[in-house]
Structure formats: structure tokens, C-alpha cells
Image (cartoon, rainbow, N blue to C red; front, side, top):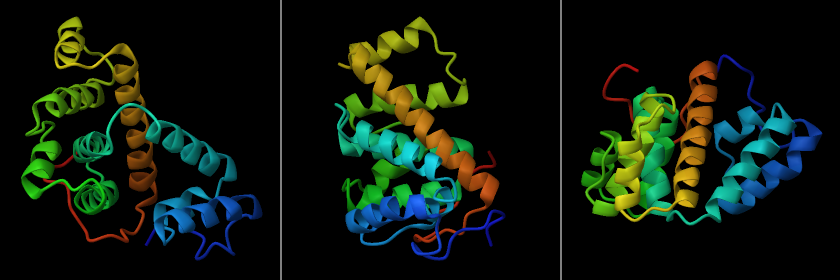
Length: 183
């Protein structure tokens, strides 16, 4: 059970959050617990959806975004996000089990994506304190400055959802995936 009250439905969420939750339902077909939890603060829900929506229009491919989410969730030990992004990785981004295992280890079996996932994992573990060599490795793999910034934004967004779910102990409403190691 969550340590923070989660509205049980769209109708029980704050009025300002209800249209946003309706949009989530239209897009996903359901409203996962994370969205209902965050809806407790309409401003936080709007911010989360706005940043997520803006990043989905960026230059990083959906599979790479899911790879980053899996790496960050594993590093932070967030079962909710591992579960959600394993589901999305498999069913939306079409990542196979071997790829998702590599992602959870902070890598990728796809060479270009490997550089992005390794960089994202390093940003997460080192709290942004990466070296010039780390940046150079990303650029040598074919990423530009704009994509570097997007990778950092994806890390930040995923750290935020990891922390919200860890603090709240949000009930997982996807097939459960547990972190392999303690965070």
C-alpha cells in the first residue's frame, strides 16, 4: 500500500488534474498508479506530462529512451519504474530480453545506443559529474550536444519518477520486476 494517498479514480483526483488524467487514459487506455499519485499535485502532474511530452518530440528514438529508463531505474532500485519500463520496452519499443538485461546493467547490445545508455548510467551514478572523456565517447558514437542534453533530461525525469515511487512505495500495477541489487 502506498505511503501517500493515491486517488482511486480520475473522479477522485483534484479537479485541476482530472483533464490531464483523462488525456493519460486516452493515450494509454488506463491511468497507471504513478499518474494518479502525481495528480495529487496538479502542478507536478502538469510538469511531468509537459516534460515527458516535450522529450518524446526530441531526437532520441523511443527504444533509446526506454533503455535509459531501465538503466536509471535499476541504478536507483525502483521496482515500479523497472516494471513499467520493462513492459513498455517489450510492448512499445520492441526491446528483447537480452537488450533489457544489458540496459539494466547500464549498457546496450546496439553500438550507438550503448554509448547513450553508458553515459546516462554514469550521469545517474555520478550525479552529473562526468568527465570530458565520457562526453567525448558519447560524441564519437554520433550524438550531438542537443542529444547529450536530451539524455540528461531523460535521466532527470526518470530519477524524479524513481524517487516519487520509492518515497510513496507506489503499488506496482504492471508485471512486477525487482531490481537485481540493492540501490
